[in-house]
Length: 130
Image (cartoon, rainbow, N blue to C red; front, side):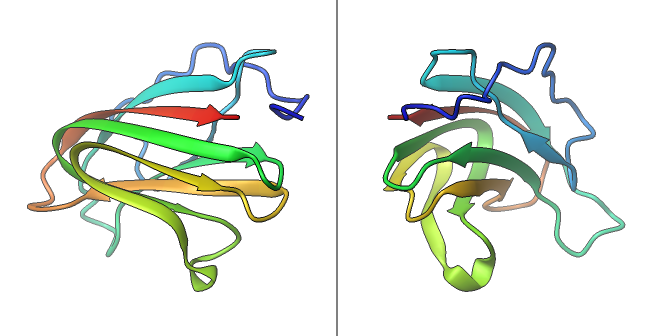
């Protein structure tokens, strides 16, 4: 199965200044193998750790690529189930990408946070699944 059959593009997905600490599910248009979103990471003075989290469902063995472009150095961390299982892939800087084969069916997570001074930055993520 190339993309989960239930995946449908989230119409009106516009991530702005309030994305921190909120989970956002990424959905693909029917038949599409990629989706692109934009966001704005900013520090949260009420939290010890501040990140934007994206969730995407996929099937075991599918190859996932996450491409990242930002206006300041950022970190993208891809994982499944919990941090104790370790990362699937990661990337840092103003742009980069990471690829991995999903080890099990289900959701995986992509966290975006700063890699540097902790100042706000805009970013674009492209999720591709084959």
